[in-house]
Image (cartoon, rainbow, N blue to C red; front, side, top):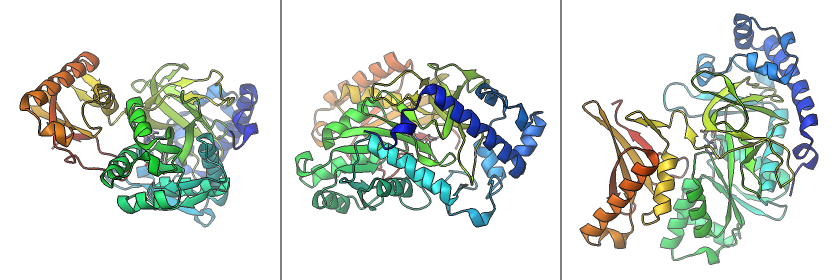
Length: 432
Ligand code: DLL
């Protein structure tokens, strides 16, 4: 099922023509209207006219999160404020938030991309979409909302939180599509069980989950507990919000909407572009955004790209599920560890609950990783020896797969904080 077959299935040759034409226009426009771009282009000795082929994109300087901060709030905008129809912002953990803006046309583009995403996951005009992404400055809520309305589905704009009421409405309104973060979906499954309900009591068919990394094992858990097909959706505020990329029914990577964004993979250490298939940092360039065009944005997200034809018929390049952000990656005694790797090991062993947190400390000059993971009530009140055996089992699997030793601590049910939005997986106490 497609929302816009022509755009989603156009030949790669035609796609490249479209991209080049749009990119040239965009680069000329930012040079003329955004002082920051003019300055960094000139400093790099680049004139917009130098851009002749798509590969010339690699000559342009990167944009990074700090550029948004330095130009806070509207310095990177390419239109006067009276043409801005909506603001969103992402809540950085330190300093000023990142402000992003949309013209009316940008909002229409975003709704189109979200409509494509929702339809790719099986949403139709007759669907009931329960949108449990947060409404407000976060792009998740309104992003999904306008896409679902464009498809013609019925939207329940419930936002995150109030989980029992959320579940009652899901049952009473006959929700078939659920949109929220994967960690919140899992939390909902847990509350359903507490309420004495199971998947047979609901009409749920599919879930569209994103805004944070999640492993394949987590997907299987969510699918079996909620009785749905779970799709991964990717996006970020700086680029547009959700609706940069979505899985199709093949679920072998997320198609990036290449008629609106150009994707590159770079080596995060050197900044050099890497060929398709290699893993590195995703860099995105918007080629149709009006209010806030962004050139070569370093997302910090680690993935790889595949341009081979997909069985679904879509021609747009696929990105692998994002395993983590560069800045989520923790380095334990020199070994790079992503929370999703630990998640995958835990869920594969399958004897714990899928709620975990990594706590990093430093003893002397040695980094210590503690993995706290919940076990069921029954297990927790079981013999100490059984718990110790399980800890050992997880320990040795972590060591053999990740190559580092960690201390596993099995904790009581519900002792790890639940999240209604993005889950906090790492507590790094080393900086404190
Ligand atoms: O999280 C936009 C969004 C909303 C995407 C709803 C999907 C669904 P930000 O708050 O700006 O925007 O955070 C963007 O979240 O750079 C990734 O690190 C992470 N992220 C988003 N989607 C995924 C995903 C929204 N599917 C940052 N898998 C991004 C892994 C994701 N990480």
